[in-house]
Structure formats: structure tokens, C-alpha cells
Image (cartoon, rainbow, N blue to C red):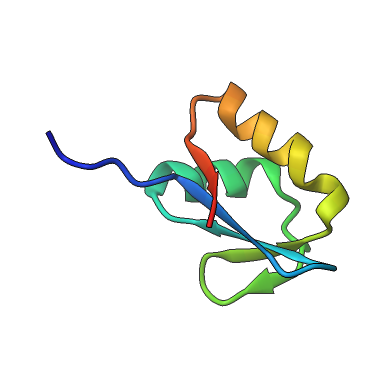
Length: 70
């Protein structure tokens, strides 16, 4: 059975959390749920404030994505 990788991963850097979309489903979810003017980090990363981490993870999981901390 192939190993499944998280659709979204989060790296905590203290005052900022970087969210990475690691799959097509993750990228589609970010495109649909994260504002287009949110600060981007590289190609598939989004910089978010830690206070938004829990609702974003919960929303992604509610939509069937696998979200995990890196």
C-alpha cells in the first residue's frame, strides 16, 4: 500500500506559520479557501498568523484533507 503524504503541512516559526499545499487537493483547497492576497511563501506556501492555524486545519480536515504539522 502506498504511503499517503499530508495534503497540507504547517511549519511553526513562532510569530508566523507557513502552510504548504503538498497535493493537487491541497492546492485546490488553498485556492478556494485562502484569500488571493494572503502573503505567499515560495510556490505552494502561505504565511499565516498562528491565531488562524486551528480554524484552517479544522476546515481542511472537515473537507476531507489530511493536514499535519511538519
